[in-house]
Image 1: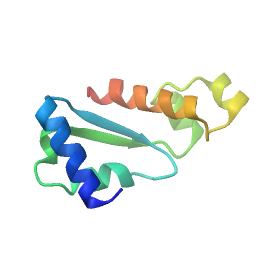
Image 2: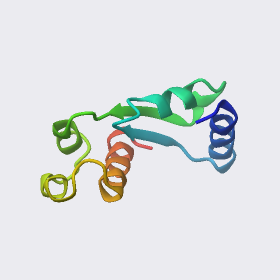
Image 3: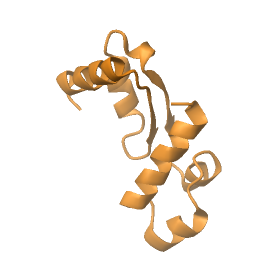
Length: 92
């Protein structure tokens, strides 16, 4: 994510009165870090979870073990479940 894109995301969230939390694996926190680099990001960024191991995906973010067993960690549904879990865990 470029700094311009991160700035656009932070400003759009602020303008809409929304907040964000990230649930990341392969990116290892890069998305949250980019957003946090934008001045004023603390108004919209609640935090991020780096769930590199499947145990963290299931235990902290609530990704079902059977889903991971069936499709693997690199899957759109797993990513969606991680995002929903991060949102719930961090209150965004």
